[in-house]
Image (cartoon, rainbow, N blue to C red; front, side, top):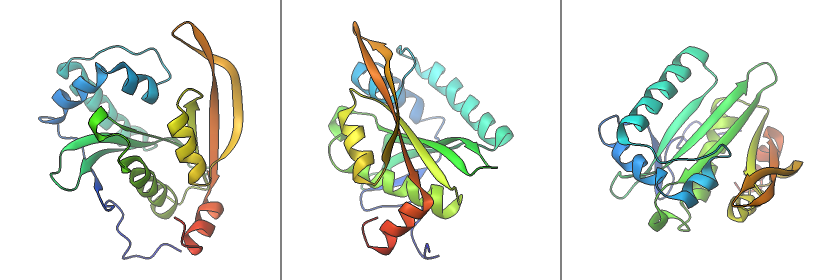
Length: 195
């Protein structure tokens, strides 16, 4: 059982926050010019976005959150200086079955491989299972994103579906892997002090 005093939006080095329409478009626009980040974060074809295009995306995300009520979008901020370092999403929620999909990404290369992803995933799972009371979550990862695959496995996710050669990138076909974690499995990790 999640303790009420558990911090829902903060970890040791990161915190969740809302979109800042003034400061964030310039920062995220720079991320879209980084092919590595975009290909780790997105399965669809990628392209650079201007700050104005990013701002339009933010408006679309907020409208979807308000109208559809099946998406929760968080900015990831560094606690030391509150700067934007990434994004985390719970989306495509099927409330009837308690299923949702999660995505997260750390934008700038200098912020990657510092443990921010693990802390973010821990917060995202706490929110998905503890606050939204989802039954299960799914993460969909291209097979070339070995770091994400290791991260999800470290948190107890099980490989459930592997779509063979379903994604074409740089002249090569890659598998797309779906990982799943049940609320009961997450609860057991919490009870054993691993989450």
